[in-house]
Image (cartoon, rainbow, N blue to C red):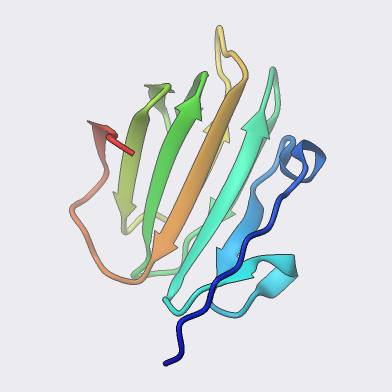
Length: 123
């Protein structure tokens, strides 16, 4: 397989209050393509904004909160926190009480990992 390189900027408007596909195996919806069975989404959430992402059976979900605070599937996260999912039907991101603006990214991969667990992320 020949190595490839791509770079693309996505406006805040494309990520505001939703999860924007930014990386995928097939370049779907204007995303950057990679040679992996994974999809990466990015979102910006403020106030009452929220989003859900359906996970197919057998898929792993990984949420990394880059900045701010948010509630992800009932778990309160702060900047730098991460949450990993296996065997969950969806990922739901919302501000909840006292929420502040947040930036997050979600990666969906095929490989199974341990069940949902909170962890501080070193990314």
